[in-house]
Image 1 (cartoon, rainbow, N blue to C red):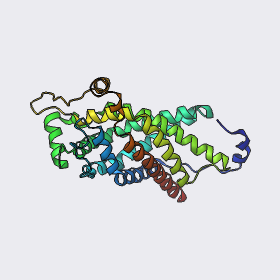
Image 2 (cartoon, helix red, strand yellow):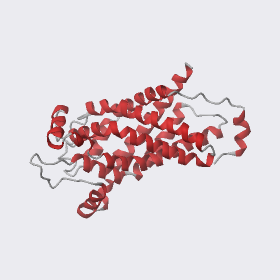
Image 3 (tube, rainbow, N blue to C red):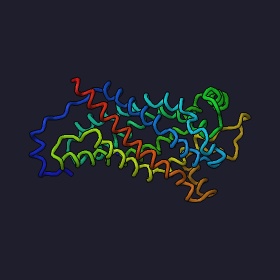
Image 4 (cartoon, rainbow, N blue to C red):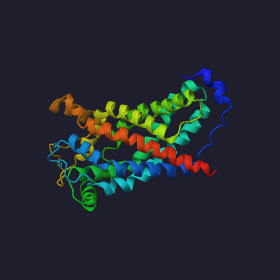
Length: 293
């Protein structure tokens, strides 16, 4: 998401920043997650409809862009909290185990990956419901819930879990090391120990946009898997997708490489703005929380 030796002496006299507690990380993450999911939900809807096998117009076009918002809001706070608690906890532990600055990118990658794996346990069930409502498969949250339970069972709520993790880990391994590197580099060049929240927001926007563009094919695969569902009789429709590799191959065979970049515009815009809001709100919330220590 190399040390500048000339700045070492300057940073040596700067007080070490206070460390946030896991509770503060959880609350800050909850605020950040809710902020991004509610503010940018229409962009997410347009992206999902562009990636749908049924096509943009058949999936709803520009109509009802807030379909599925309730499901997203329910999952955003606990999902983001789970991510940041795990991320900050792992980062502290791994940094102590590998204190050499050359290992910082690896620490950030492993910490962010662990955060995403944990967050997906909360995020995926709400994502399944949200995306099926976004593409007009269902008009109510209750109807979507009943359909998953009746036709797919409880495990249906985790349909697309592995494809989501397969998308999130590369995304976060690009975004967070880049984000942390930009923050650290800018702080060093301005002779500070850390950047301000608004500066972190800019770093988050750039890192999020780059990571979003590069991982769009994985996002398309994840969307297809989540949107497909078994027929009530137990059969499979022509729009049924299962498995990351098989879905990827099928899209390439039936629609060509271009289909793997469906929705890249809204996705990059969503995660550029989202990276700014998500990480900016998080850093601001953390700064306010630390003032009370």
